[in-house]
Length: 188
Image (tube, rainbow, N blue to C red):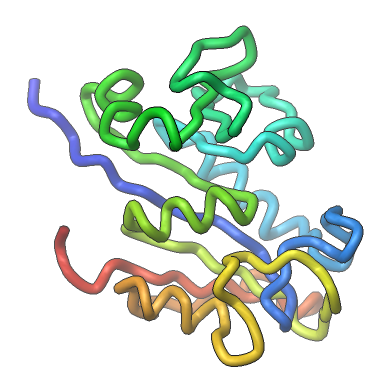
C-alpha cells in the first residue's frame, strides 16, 4: 500500500478587515453564513485529521468524531486525551505528529484560530480556502494571521508564503459571502 502525501488545507471566513473574531474574541453573527458552514463541515468530514486551537476545539463540538489535534502550550509534547490528541509544537515538531497520527498520509484541515493559521503558514499550506463576508468590519478584532495589518491583507500574507489565487466561488450572493481558493505555487 502506498503512502498518500500529506496535504494541508486552511479554512477561514474573514471580515473586510481580515478579522476572524471581534474585539471580545468571539465570532460575531455577521461572520456566520449557512452556505459557508455547510461547505466547511463537508471539508472537515472528508479530512483525515483536523487541527484546532484550544478555544476553537472547545467551541466546535466534535459531533462526528473526526480525528483531532488540539494545539496547546499546556500539552506536554503530543499526548492522547479522551477528546483528541493534544500537541505543543514547542516540544514536538510537525513531522513527528504526522508520523504518529497519519503514518499513511492524508488530508489535514487546519481551521484555526490565529495560532494554528500562523503555525501552518510556516509549515506550508497546500490550499487555503479564504471566505470573505463583504461589508463586515471588526475593528480591534482578531486577525486571521498575525501578519495582517495596515499594509498586509490576508491575501498578501498568503502570497508572501507561496500561495497563488486559483479560484473564486460565490457562496452566498444575498449575504455577500465569497470563497477564494489559494494553492501552493510550486511543489514542496
